[in-house]
Image 1 (tube, rainbow, N blue to C red):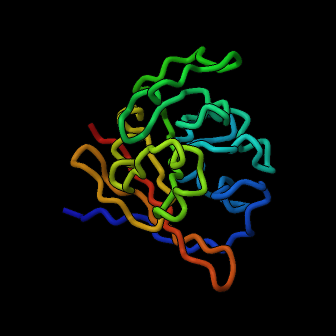
Image 2: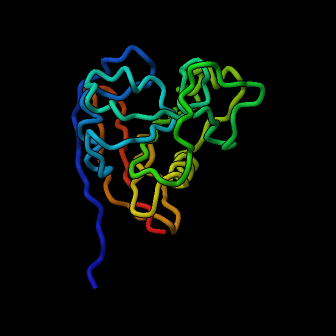
Length: 192
């Protein structure tokens, strides 16, 4: 029997073009979406979605759906990753797009949470007292929305450990120039 080994790669990308702390490096989505099994025409759920719709290559985000705990970002789904609930005392404002129920039918889920407590402090959710999720919590959260055979990608400083319901597909080191921290983009496939 042959053992399975994930794809491994190194991506040297441009710094983010979006003026938002923690935005995706430029060129990231063009590489990440194919590893998630998503084309330009597939819907992708962006957990901790921030300002993904401002990404310079609009083709990569034309079918993006966002999930975030910060109502000021106008996410499609207002949920806290740690609790799995809408933030206490926060009501979705007019303009929230809730036409698609948040169910386990996503082919591709992409998670980009804050990586450290210092990063977390840059966001309104930290100021509101919400807890920083771990890489493992974010992966498990994303997997609950992926359909069987669907993929979840996590951009973080850590390579999260998948539960038995998922297997590792790919790992890529993500660099944005000299003297910057290396991030890890991990892709997992839900197997049950």
